[in-house]
Amino acid sequence: MILPRGEGMRGLRIFQIALSKRYGQFLAYMAKKQSRMGEHLCLFFICIFITPILLSGCSHFNEGFLSKSTFEEANDLFNKGSYKASLGKYEQIIEKYPATGDRVLFEMGIIYSYPKNEQKDYQKSLECFQKLIKDYPGSGYRQNSEMMIFSINNVAVKDKTITTQQTQIETLQQEVTSKENEITALQKKIEELEKKVFAYAIQKGSTDKIVIEKKARRLMLISKGEVLKTYKIALGGNPIGPKERQGDNKTPEGTYFIDSRNKDSYYYRSLHISYPNERDKKRAKELSVSPGGNIMIHGIKKGFSWVGDAHTEVDWTKGCIAVTDEEIEEICKLAPNGTIVEIRP
Image (cartoon, rainbow, N blue to C red):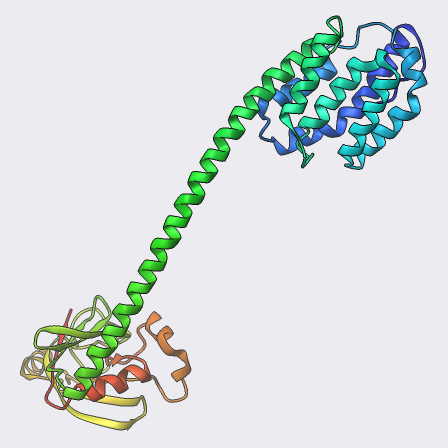
């Protein structure tokens, strides 16, 4: 901080402008970042510029003017972010020009508590302000030094609280990560068991029923009342309600069975369902329409197998039940002709 030339009120005004320039960067940072020093500390720095704290007269001007070059160096170092070197220069000033000691102590206290200073030390900052109050009882910096002491003590308490909370958060995060790892490990075990059960079912050919739930878009392979595997499906483009007539794009509802299969289907592989049953035929007759037919469980259209699971995002068939190519291959292995197919609404 550089002392200006001049005397009286004009000299004091120039000095205040120079001080404002010295702390301008600090104030802007505090207002923008809202650092952990809190509102009290920010308010204090604002007060520096709106309260006459430098009315201790011009007794320091002469000696301060003599130390002008050293103040310039300290100021330049601060502006460059060389806080340690800036503190060193202020220590030289206070040794050579003790009359400026209160101002130097105040500046050093600010630097030690400056948020951008990665080596900030609240304890040393407090020591600077406390020494100023003790050694310079009539200083114009006394009141604001007392405010700084109060603010820094509050900040220290808040920092301690934040540190404790951060430690607790880190501990909880570690626990969550540990639980997630446990869940992942359990899921892998479940998947491995499902694969073993499914492989065993394939060997035994034990699927005795296929249940299709239209609303849930789900196909289940059932063996002796137990679900062996579940598949996500796509239905006809007009899925609500049972199929009534040819061309209505509805998937049937009722109980049927697999009556044939095609290993070279236009839809990779297919299992033909025994639609229409007697009930379907009767309904169509009452409506004087054809009930239609050719309802199958099948894979994806040839040339589009790369779509994979994404095909279930829309109901795209003409009334059939669609799964992926890999899935229809599994279903074909497990569901022989004669397997019951129950299609629910």
